[in-house]
Amino acid sequence: MEAYLVFEDGDIFPGTWIGTPKKVAGEVVFTTGMTGYQEVITDPSYAGQLVTFTYPLIGNYGMVPGEGESDHPCCAGVVLSELCQDGEQNLGAWLDTHEVPGIAGIDTRAVVHKIRKAGVLRGVIASTPEPEVESWPDPRSLQWVDGVSVKKPVEYPAAEPDAPHIVLVDFGAKASIVNSLRKRGCQVTVVPWSCDPEEVLRRSPDGLLFSNGPGDPKALLPFLQDWVPLVSRIPTMGICLGHQLLALAFGADTERLSFGHRGSNHPVKEVETGKVWITSQNHGYTVRPASVDEKDWQVTHLHVNDGSVEGLAHRHYPVFSVQFHPEAHPGPSDAKGLFDRFLNHVRKEKVVATHG
Ligand SMILES: NC(=O)CC[C@H](N)C(=O)O
Image (cartoon, helix red, strand yellow):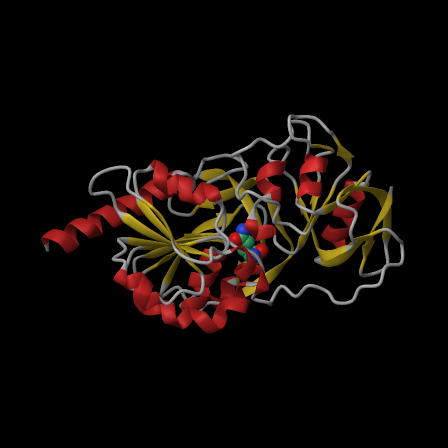
């Protein structure tokens, strides 16, 4: 069945429907990972976006139960070149089960060229080359984070005695972040993004983790000051959206990247050691370098390709954050040691708090 990817500037890419044939509008983004389509499609950070896969063959190992970053597709739609209907649960049928549309047969290389040249662009997948768009989704809306965050706290018991208790503030957390903490023995409580920080304090966390999530970080600006007293005292780590939010909370600014970083091969340099990690990334916004006050923050990581800020550590508070994904999934796990670094710090503080 014929479908069209129509950009807001009028450019039309014809293809065929996959998943559920229903019109959908969103920001068109592209990801360059050669594997990991399941993790990408189920990553809550993609809510509201049309994800274009640059790897030409997608779907070739089906959908593997239990391997998703959540149990349903989170992106608004998918754009790909060739769909392979293989695997026990094939991608097209799985998308349809969840009523998510997609378009195949697209010259994805041309789509990427277009986005790289023009910067962020919105588009529609529709049955006609001249679809009507009632309204474009707004990345500054709270609906994205609200739609993917847990509605009430979810508790995971500790796997080891005396393990630290980490409260994960869920702006759209990937399952792999929870797993990375649980694998290291932690007790984890996942709380809704909108919860009262005072209520979090009553849960006696040893550490806080601000998760990844969809949309423009500035959508959450009105809520950030309430967290400052907590994150100034309790060891806190931020990942991706969480990194941007911590920067905003302490007075830095964020801005939109021209076309984002999405893929599994983004080189990031650790400033202190000069070591380069190949990292998994998925973000359209970044911390504005000129807004980072060197008196308060140390820039710990930089993107090798464009020099953008990839990591921050606060000089006065126990806060550090990274723009990339140490939990990987998909992608390399070069940076997974950051969870150990965080938990070592949390454990040290816990001992001090217990024994004075
Ligand atoms: N993966 C994320 O947390 C993405 C953060 C934010 N929504 C961005 O696009 O920059």
